[in-house]
Structures are given as structure tokens and as C-alpha cells.
Image 1 (cartoon, one colour):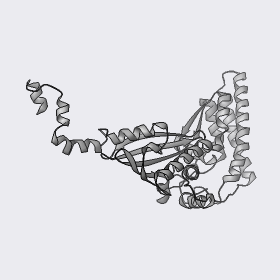
Image 2: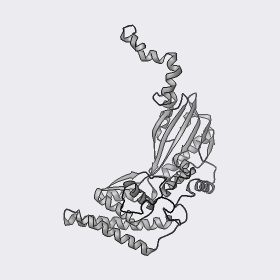
Image 3: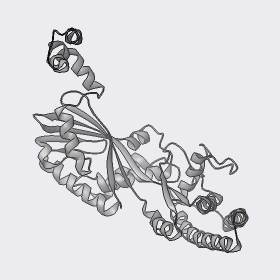
Length: 347
């Protein structure tokens, strides 16, 4: 009606301003647009500004004195407790989960006072600290991928050598990322946060019994231990609670078992032969083949030495894939996701 009156020359001005000022808009259309995230709100603008510092916790100036933080594992009451915990969590994460980085993937106002945020925290696994220097030395790029938390991975030596063989061919080293994703709902009153509700995806996955990937389970356990342990809790008690919540029942997260050395040697020799032949066959001249073989020998030596220590400390008494999905049982089927899951078990 407003646009028709404007086209007929009967209305002068901004028709959208008139529409927004109408009772119909305020009563019906505005809440609908807010609910689907099409219209920003003052609460959403405030939360966006508060999170621009690169953290999922709010700064002191955003908090009401009676703010309550609640998650699956803990509850904090009051602005002082919230600020103290947030400061320590951010400092511990920056010091222990290097390089720790957070990002907001989506921010949507639920209504005039509540704002939902999807966020992600990521860092490089400590067991892969050798990868960036090696990649720089060899001129490789590092490509990170997320693990499927519901897939049980089988460790195979061949997968390790295929990883480095692929890196030699493509100059891209694909490694699993350590990451945690979650959802936060901030409730504001008079411009200050009175409630902060947080839920972590992997905790919910563990609660439902679908968390089966050891590395993903260890990622969420590490995050909870470093960046969500409340003040006043005993580290041993908190670690036991985290273990019972997210590690219990995950294949590979228990006591350790090593395969016989004869089997390991047999599995090592075959992949070496499979990798060396393609390297030499793809070389343009003898010097290039010698360089490639030298690089492969260096990488393989580092991998064997590292994996021996990692597997010696992280192998499982329960056969991977037993009662689950044997992702790497057939090495010939090399779909990227399955192959990445194979490799992820080493790290």
C-alpha cells in the first residue's frame, strides 16, 4: 500500500521508514525477521562487539553483577567469578594450546534480548609440532582437516607412508586439526549479559554414545581440562570427571597394546617399496629422483621414530574397528575421508 501510494505520487519520503514505524511491522514482521536472522538487534550488535576480541567469553564491562554461566560440566555465578574464570581460561589456552585461535561462524538474534552464537576453537596438536618446521624445510604446504568423531579409525603403517608419499607428489601434507565447536546463547537485560549458556558439540556426541574417534575425544578432553576447568576444582577430580564424560568407552582411549615387531616390520617394508617406485618413476632426471628419495628417507625416519613413541604411548588394548567401522581394512579403497581417518589414528 505504501509503495503504491509512492508510485502514484501521493507519498513523499522513505516508504521503508514508514513501514518500520507501523504497528503491524512492530507486532508481526519485525519479530519474524529477527527470528530468522534477517534483522540485527541492539543485543546482537553488543555481543558482536564483545566477541571481536577473539574469545568466546565476554569482557567484564558486558556482565551484569548476577550473571550466570552454565555448561555441561560446570556453572559460574556472579560477575567476579565469571571474569576470573574467563581470564584464566584464555591465558591457559594461549599458553598450552598453541597457537590457540577462536572464530565465530554465525551470530543470530533469537529475539530482542537473546543472541545465539556458533563458535570454533582450534589449535595445533602437540604431537604434530614437528610438522611445520619439516614442511618449511621441504617447501610443503600443510592442509588441516577435521576428524569425524563418529568413525573408529584403524592404525596401519601403510597409511603413514602413503601420507608422506602423497606429500612428496603434491607438496601438501594433510594433517588432522585439533578443534572444538560449540554453541553459546547470551541473554541480555538493559545492555548487560545476565545469562551465558554454553554447549559443546563433542560433549553432546559423547553423551549420546556416538563419540568413537580417539583423537576427537582427546581434543575435547584437552579443551575441557585447559580452557573450562572452574576455579576451586581439584585438577585430579576434574580430570576424572572429564575422563568419565568424554573418554570412557571411546576405542583407543584406554590402556595400551603394541603389535608384534615382526608384523610391524612386514608392514613397513611393503609400503617403502610401494612408495620408492612411484617416486623414481615420476622423476624428470636422476638428480630429482635422488633428491626425492633423500627427502622421503628423512621424512620416513622422522615418522618411524615419532610414531614409535606415539603408538607406544597411545595404542589400545581393544582392537580398532572391532564392533565398529574398519575404515582402513582395505587399503585399496583410498577415499580421502577414510584415508584421513586412518592417518589420524597415529596422531
